[in-house]
Length: 186
Image 1 (cartoon, rainbow, N blue to C red):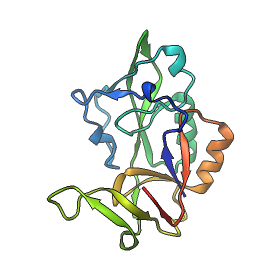
Image 2: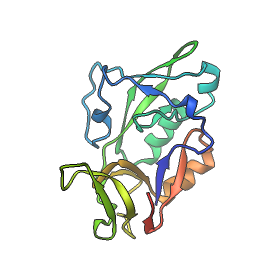
Image 3: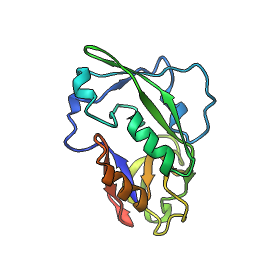
């Protein structure tokens, strides 16, 4: 199992700024179906179009993948029908970038072993996980799993080994795959 992550070599100065006042990103990280409505999320990048167009996935501060048409088509074919896509307005230094989408993963699975994890909770709560000092993942995810959010901690977007093998063959740029061992530090 792998975690979808931002590549280490991706320049921090090119991480986009999600405009929260237009459409809340929480709409896309809860693993629920979102009705197709007239929503147009906006993400601002301090980079030129020619730089951004080199990537299949554009990292941003919402940690919700923003993907191009090529990666969208791939995921439609390989994700067991558990993803949705919403057009996003990408504002670059020198114009508007078209044909990028917010990836909404509508499957959430219990993939974290909370008994063996050391959780950090949001102050004054007992169940709202803010992060982990140590996170332990389950050994055997469901057989039909390809892409899902962890139901225990929705910030984690997980990928099956099989899906990552296929994605690596396509050489998508702007996404990294962090191999998960049974116990990982976070």
